[in-house]
Image 1: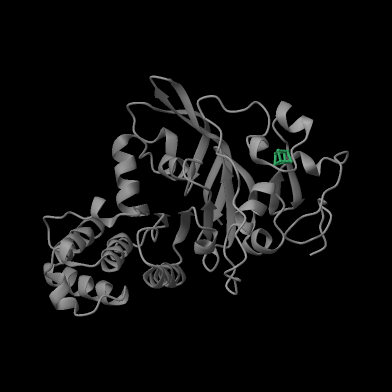
Image 2 (image 1 turned 180 degrees about the horizontal axis):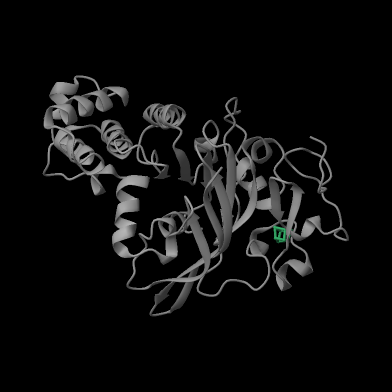
Length: 343
Ligand code: SF4
């Protein structure tokens, strides 16, 4: 059953220099209880896409240019401010890279979570809210819950604060949890623990998850499907299996080749993607990856590539899949590129 359906979303920011076209025609959907990873480098539009879903982009200069966002059969873009506040309080929760921006630094952590219970269940008694708060702190892996309940956010470590944020978000049992770079500020061991916690909560509560990250490795164990974004567009979409073992877009190839493998030879250099993304004040008229793509052809500069379907859940936007394009070798699979690759 569909929980979220985003269709042809275009979102821009008006600036003194002109209009920054941050999101340029993004479409995807998410079923109830599923997890989707949105992956791409900084400035590719992934966070703007996520904030568009909850209408949290700045209204002063942000503009929805086109598109529809249907969440739980509601048209998000036609809801009133009050209706959106209720959706954000109960149905769609967001956690960010820095929990200090979301936790109130002047309020004890336990009290903040209890307030969350009050919003979700207005008739709940104080003792019951406290008991549930202690339970949820415990279930998110926070030790000494009685003591932690009374502490302020600055008395928590970075990983503990992120656990508290997850607890706060899960209080209302949201239908959708959007995690925007939730582990970027944490060290590797804590990162893995927080990702395990998100996965555990998703499996336990059947909450839909959108996990936004610049790091493909982060989504590997959580996401059923992955959208790879570049310069405001989804350039490849597929199952996690497709993206890791059978990816088709030259940008995805570049991202995978720049990740150190587990058994990496320290003497073997990683392969970076040369160059920088285009200026979204004036996006290129053809494929946005042209200037950095080793496989670019004349057509790439002139027209945006169509979206080709490799199968019903795997799409790629690249001219190299046009039937008349000269064939190249996929550096990940070492096979000639084709639309129906042998898996
Ligand atoms: Fe590279 Fe052309 Fe494909 Fe763009 S359309 S990714 S430039 S080959």
